[in-house]
Image (cartoon, rainbow, N blue to C red):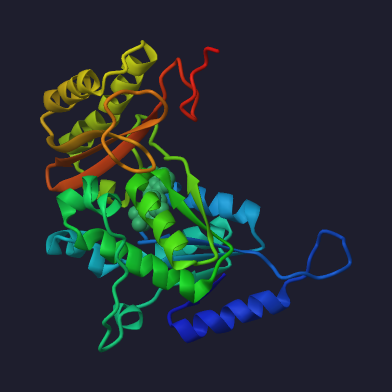
Length: 305
Ligand code: AMP
């Protein structure tokens, strides 16, 4: 694995990898290698590594970026406290099969005089995380992801369902800007006790680690109620909030939305994204689950004909 820090080095390394590539399929002819990319903010865990695994299985060359993007942080303390572990990350990335690790500085990503922002307008950026963290959050995300994709021009880029709204925003941005990259969504990786893995979990201590479990527990309780036949999202919200308030976490939202438009869903008829955000002590956590009522398949069609 090679580590690079500038865009010039990145392009050089990509060209070298591409040149060195030989098709081992036995066709006898060479072809242009496929490139898969995983954008991250580092402090890698099994969630990130699951994206690498999928990217590795689908591509000839795998590129990972590690960049704690200042423009998407709405709280200075969160940016300062965000865990950084460059050496450990490089070891894990290499083990997982990353070919090229791109770790740019803030000055490399936003050079002097930088003046361009990519905004995905409307409800996709303004609800849920956008409403809580301010519209600058998804401007920051869309801008940095657009820049990274343009720098690498991967065939596919891999994102986690953990940040469900981020994937919706990125898909819209890629379509709108005509960036020729397929966006692949990978399932949420959880700890054995259900907590969704997150770099921010490192900051949870003792009691807070236990209280944090109420996020996934509330989502699983809601999903169980749906499996039992409840479809009314008002009722489901009551069920989920009960679990959260019992654990004394500071709930920011428990929302039921259409997974594509992110508009509020009144009933679970077809897929509904149930998303939660809460503060546990100093740490802000998010999680989600896709709800499908037993009478409907994942496309929203009824199973009864
Ligand atoms: P981050 O470093 O938090 O920006 O995350 C980088 C990528 O990893 C994003 O696409 C996240 O959605 C994804 N990711 C983070 N945590 C998980 C998880 N527990 N399961 C699956 N993907 C995740």
